[in-house]
Structures are given as structure tokens and as C-alpha cells.
Amino acid sequence: MTTTPRARFAPSPSGRMHLGNLFAALLAWLDIRALGGEMLLRMEDLDPDRCKPAYLDQLADDLDWLGLDWDLGWQAGKVAYQQSHRTAQYEAAFETLAHRGLVYPCFCTRAQLHAADAPNRGDDMPVYAGTCARLSPEAVAEKLKTRRPAYRLRVPDETIAVCDRHYGLYQENLARDCGDFILRRSDGLFGYQLAVVVDDALSGVNEIVRGHDILSSTPRQRYLQRLLGFETPAYAHIPLLMSPDGRRLSKRDRDLDLGELRARFGTPEALLGWLAGQTGIAPDTTPRSAEQLVEHFSWDVIRAHRENITVTAE
Image 1 (cartoon, rainbow, N blue to C red):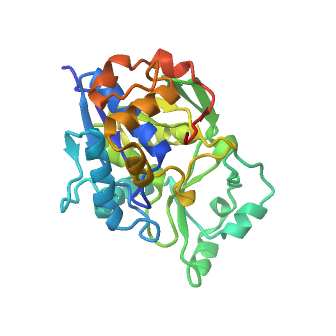
Image 2 (tube, one colour; image 1 turned 90 degrees about the vertical axis):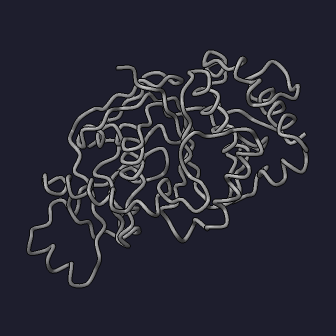
């Protein structure tokens, strides 16, 4: 039986989309439309301190204005594709892992983690040294009296490889390169790694296009997929858009957000054509609709821009 290609765009409603978010959404949309598949929209609002309800409608409106439509997923008033309403699904996966003895409580503070005598990953996160994995049941019981723990997944001394459609082979040794990672925070919220794996699997996503900054998470996610009996999607990680001064575009800095871009370009065709020309998707910056860009889309073209892409506001 042939499986329908299904991709997803999964923004975090923590602010207005910026140009880097748009680039990721556009490539995911072009890829799945070129494959004749389905697009799903999921709102990744796990963290209530960062994610605000007002941005849900704004994100959907921006995508709709751009012509980046979706076949399945979030709509106003419907919460099935909104992570903050999917705790039961994450709880079930967590309990499956816990019952197999793969989960343990961690009482380390952030300061302790950064002070640990362990190497750092490229994203400046320390590799967890396994401190709490060695606690006795008595020590755990004592610590539970005064502190709520996070919960970590035990990882093996095993190298997990990913064949990325853009960057090629990427691999990490889980024990050496990331260590036991968090499945649930001390405040009870589930971690990104578990949530995204569960959501992609249960919604039938089999094509994932996302930023290069997430590539290092993929071995962990592949390991979780294996433990939970999920299929592994095809991955394509894409170059990050950078400002001329070398900074990565960020919602925090309001770099070229969609409000500014919509006002400046006036039409979605003008904005998409400019972005396509700047990033090499199209040969020039002629205004084009999202549908018109499908015929220009090619992973060979994207591979020709392996380094971070600098965009200017001029």
C-alpha cells in the first residue's frame, strides 16, 4: 500500500513569524506540493510562558495570506493539533518508556548542569554526566521531599545515523554527544523531543523539512521512534537565514517579521518572489505565487546553498 506523503509546518506561537520561519514554511510547502502530498499545520505551544493565544490566529492568517495552505491541522477553536491540548498522548508515551525502566528522575539545577565537568554540544548545552542516574532509591526518596525532579531518558553507548536529504549523513553517539536527555521538565511540561516524536507519528507525518539548528536533535528523535515503535520520517534540514551582520534571524529581535514584510511588499507574490530570488529557489526576484514557485523547487538548488544564507532588507 502506498503511503501518502505528508509534511507539517509546526510554528511556535511565541511571536510573529520572521523571515527565517517563512523560509522553512515555504520549503516544507514546496517540497510536499511537488510530491503531490498533504500539508499539516501544528501549533507547538508546549510552554505557556512563551506561547500566547493571540499569536495562533496571527500565524494562521500570515500563512493564509502567503498562499501556504494546509490540508490538515489547526484551525481557530480546534485544538487537536495544538500541543498544549495533547498531554494525554505524551503521558502515554512517557509511561511506556518508564515501565521499561528507561526513565529516571533528575534533581540537577541548571547551574549544576552548566558547572558540570563535561564537554558542551555545539548549541552550548552541556552533555549530561548522568549524575542522577546513579542515585540509590533511598537518595531519590529523600530528594523528592524537597524538590520536584525532571525526568530523563537513559541512552545507550550507540551511534545513531541520519541520512539527511540536504546535508547527507549525520550521526551522533548518544552517550558521548548528548547524554541522557529530558523527557519531562520539573514543572510537569513534556519536553520537545518526546512531544514532536509523538505528534509526528500519530498524525502520519513522513516528510519533515526544518532548520539546520534542529539537525542535532534528530538522532535522539530517531532513538525515541525506535523505542516507541514508530516509523522514521524522511528528513531535510535547511540552511538558516542570517542577517548581514552574521546574526541568525530571531523572533526575539523582531528581525524582518511578517508584519513589517507584509507592509513593505504589499502582496504575497512580491514577498515570495523576493525571498525565492534571495535564497536561490528561483533564478530572480520576479513576483511569483507559492503555486508558481513549485515548478522552480529542487533540492539540488537548495544543496547549492549549503552555507547559511544572508538576506538583506534592501
